[in-house]
Length: 295
Image 1: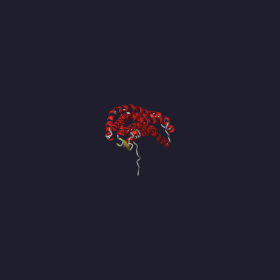
Image 2: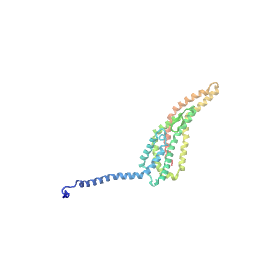
Image 3: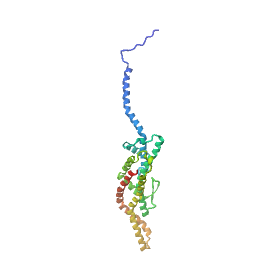
């Protein structure tokens, strides 16, 4: 049997071979398009440990800050808010990358210290509102509202009714003066006064303790200033009731004084609201600016 050798078509071009240069060119174009993406991913992976420490400090701050750290806000919302603030502020920070540990254990320890720095800022901001709560306790005790308590969902404890009123008033003034902007500014400035990794070496300095003690002392100053008008008027009512009891012993002054002190106290509270709001508008910016001098 005779076999015929296959013949080659030398006159016609090979369609498969003609597509090879186009495939090589397409692959080259794809590599050129993927190169910026790969460079961005490589840069992001190098920045990820630094960004993680920034987010941890943001988490410590906004989990303890007033309003943002309240238990009534879902934890997933607080986590997403902390991550968002950290990511948005990160491009504007000047950070020494050599201070960020490359070891995993050392990075975790540094992360705990960054959370501590954020907690110090958030707790210091919370101290500002404790003066208003204490003022409500002073006034409620004088008016006879010492047993009129409401449940505070944040601390899971009973708080006087007037303390809640003054606390809500302070929150409204806080937002009216853009106090939340002060917190974000304090978070951004904290990386200048306390760079990443520095708290591990220095810890709590004398300046930080002095500022914390000053903020703690302001609780009683704010409480006395806010409650002074109402407590002063109620003290005069007590003196007047004492004089009436001496001149007219047959009158049951004790029972009458309960209702009189409530009416006069509420009336004085309404009259002093404008003074209290103006006082808080002048006080809160000064106290919030002290957060920038913690370290």
